[in-house]
Amino acid sequence: MRTRQPLNFTTIIMSQEELFSALSNAVVGMDEGTTRQLSEQAVAQGVDAYTAIEQGLVDGMNRAGKLFETEDYFIPELLLCSDAMYLGLDILRPHIKRAENTQRPKIVIGVIEGDTHDIGKNLVKIMLEASGFELIDLGRDIPPQRFLDEAIKADAQVIALSTLMTTTMDGMAEVVRLLQAAQIRERFKVIVGGGPISQSFADRIGADGYAGTAPAAVKLVKNLLGVAA
Amino acid sequence: MNAIERFTAYAKGQPIDRLPCVPIVGNTAARVVGLKIAAFHGNGKAIADAQIAAYRRFDYDVIRIFTDLYTQAEAMGAKVHYPDDETAYLAAPAIASVEDIARLRPADPYRDGNLPHHLEAMERAFQSVGHEVPVNGALTGPFTTASFLVGAETLARLMLKNHAAVHQLCEIAFESARIYAEAILKTSCVPSLTDAMCSSTVISPAQFREFGAPYLKRLVDVIHTHGKTVTLHICGKTHPIWEAMADTGADCLSLDNAADLHAAKIKVGHRVRLMGNVPPSEVMLQGTPAQVRAAVRDCVRKAHDNPKGLVVASGCSLPVETPFANIDAMLGAVREIGWPVDPSAIASD
Image 1 (cartoon, each protein chain N blue to C red):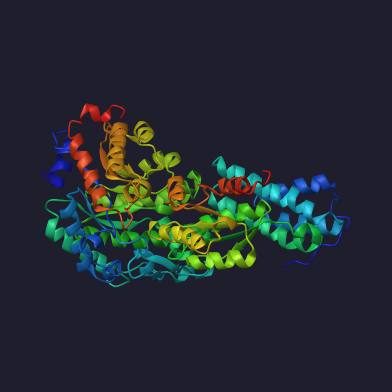
Image 2: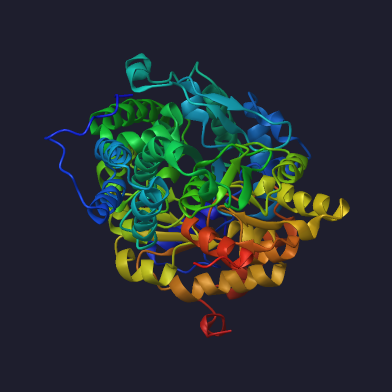
């Protein structure tokens, strides 16, 4: 990690709008160096960190998501944009005023037991985080019961399940069955996704929704929670 | 007509009894002989016996010796986990970072990992039924193997940051695949190529042209040198790369259900045979025989007149627990349509 650059004559002082737009461009441009420099500059200039995240980093990531939807960006590009976004988040988050930091709805996410493919899950996580949700990432190869335990513990609103393998699809149904058996099905929205998953499969196992892509997962969660898009 | 007679006549434009049909049976073969999937691990005879039994049970047109995509990466050092009764999965890549690429060596197909057992399975299957049905040996494409060697996310990042490292990985994966392909050809079987990570669901068409296609082309060339034809399968979305896939020289493109056979026919049907694309999960695993029949008729309607021909197939390897009734329904639907194709089958249902 480089130490923070002090403001000096070589640093161009930007207006807030210019800074946010440059941050957004750096993220969508997969430019970690510029993202770091601009994030540090935002801190040094005393710009509101929350706004810099929302209108800079997150805006850039959302633009990357749109480019992914239009097939201008693919998984490698999206990963590098997210690397830049997370780097900026690490710098800016400690400067967020506490009150702004407590409102985010929580989502427990993971790949079902028996499957270790997690690129799809990671993309969904990235896009949901960029959209203001707090993600509790359980990782991959997760037994159904753990999704419940963690969702209860975190007081999450959504459980997001991913799999790429048809052999592990039943694990998704098992999560729904366990929630029903524990009589807490209504407490959580359950969403499913991954290669072999379809809307009809989601309907059949009684999940609340299915999304075919990471940007679609964001829209789905916002719809289910009634959060403005 | 047996499968070889059917393919031979079809290629010459002579009469056939029905279109060729390939439900891509992988580990489902274990269910036919009542074995657990773990029984295939390190046991070429078990793989061959199960694949032969599955072929006899369903009477389809290609046997493919395949258990999972990781066989070559494992033989080069990747760690693969073998659950008791499910398809194997990648536990850890062969190397942790770019610095370790130089440590990688091409696999010795007669010594490393499970390659010797797969070769044994090919040899046994060919000896037993190779005179009546083509026996293919699954060959994972260099780009996909590279992703298992270094990890998919690491490879994705390298593609944008370090082209040379990606080419280095693909080159060693290619060399390993080339040696394995020669060994497969020695068993009298034909390698069939799968390059899952080249999907446009994962990487861009430009990335495919740079990192996927050149290595596939070289493998196709090797196989063509032996006078054999090659099928190339890429999963997921492929419409932006159909032409680049055909440019590899592959004779047949096996397309996932995310692809539209009608559009593929128009774009590349004069250059390549098409194979596909009944949805493996939604229809073959979860659907009814009636839905399988409808999906088969849909494929035939879209591509029966493909200039280079059509093989009715599942879009990808069948899920292990695919009901036998649905596999029977697939073959049944193709027989019902017959040849020349029954006009009522290609009218809208």
